[in-house]
Length: 291
View 1 (cartoon, rainbow, N blue to C red):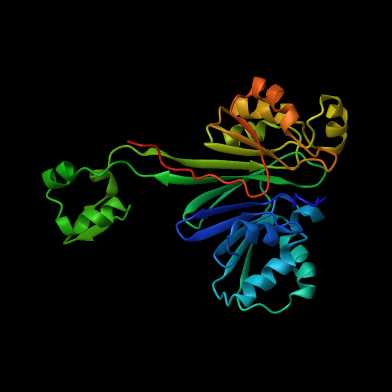
View 2: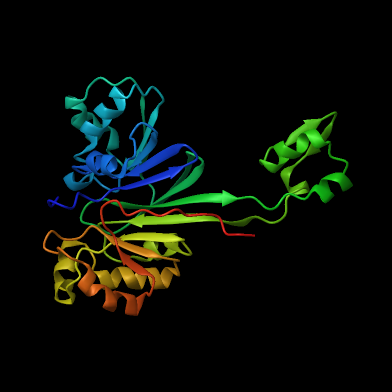
């Protein structure tokens, strides 16, 4: 539940002029405004599941987006039943100047390309159907002008080939692999909340630059409660981060009884050193590695 200085869990990703939102609990758009960010560029909203603390802020957000004169389609991704759930919530936001396009998840793992990134949804283990999400931005290999010259590829085609386009000209086909080296490391972020630890989380978070994971409880004695409610402790999240060999982990989705996560962080860091407590407005910039 929201606290006076802590809104409900939500994540916004911004890339190349587009934004992706994961979950939209009560207060999400207030937290967004506190950060100085706008709802208008949101092109995709992903829902982990349909408990109220993850979706009850949606009607107000849609009204704000509509009032901003947005007309581009909005994609929504979530477990089966998404259109029905959103339709019910839209009883109080019935008229919008943009189309909503639904992608309902039914497979254990499902991938799609949207907003310049690959979005992979993977099923986790909560007391209702729930998904985690991985977001990846691929990076092509380095362009080789020497190889392009050796193969007599016209200069006017270089930029298009570098962007991954295949070109046919006078019966000759030019493909990107003719001028690009091996693919370089891209950017990967994995987000998971409301779940017991599962192998699917480890598999899908493998090698992520940033892993954002629920830590419902910091108190070790609440492990049994976490098991009963299908949540996890700080320490279980840290074990997932360690096993997935991620670069960095942020904890989120704290129990209302947990006011300050900091006192537990030394024990968490003993399991996975690059662990950090999430907080409202916490953000970072993920960049491609230097060549």
